[in-house]
Length: 50
Image (cartoon, rainbow, N blue to C red):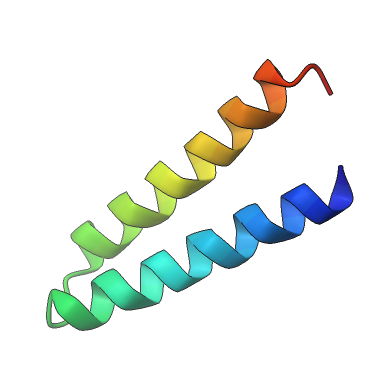
């Protein structure tokens, strides 16, 4: 459970930084990517029943 959370956090941070870089500093797009990845991690954890 903890390892899966680590991977979700790492993926969210990497997506945030990558989108921030690719969008030339657009915080709106970067926080959108962060929310998307974090939401997918949360949903996967809930669906797994943990």
